[in-house]
Length: 168
Image (tube, rainbow, N blue to C red; front, side, top):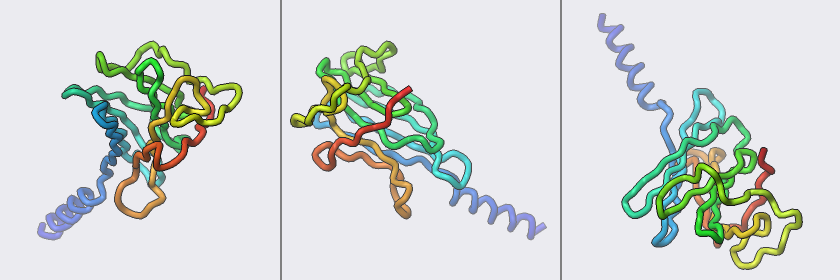
């Protein structure tokens, strides 16, 4: 009986220690919104994730489940459209936008995520790839790093905008 109890305790501790946890990266945009992308590992020994984004502004919070990453995700770029909407572009996962007043995800996007037919030279933080969008930064997986955080956000002034693959 003691052996069973011991095995049960060791097994429970092992599951607790190795249970997949969530990782979060926050984009804090001055007095604007705080955008958090969260990833949680899918079951397996590979780098596949379930993903979620949440936006917090003036004490309100909204969340949205994103497409699971089964190896296709190459990062998500964050933009601000000249209309005032914020846009998260996922490459093959396409894009979606949200507004602050009212705080909501746009169900019918008013922002085009089609690439410019001619890539323009970047003017300040305006995107050379997408019309009327200024590049704010990028959420990226860091699973190749040992230990620690598996996702991060890099501000536009820390690294240049990377062109994402085309959407559907």
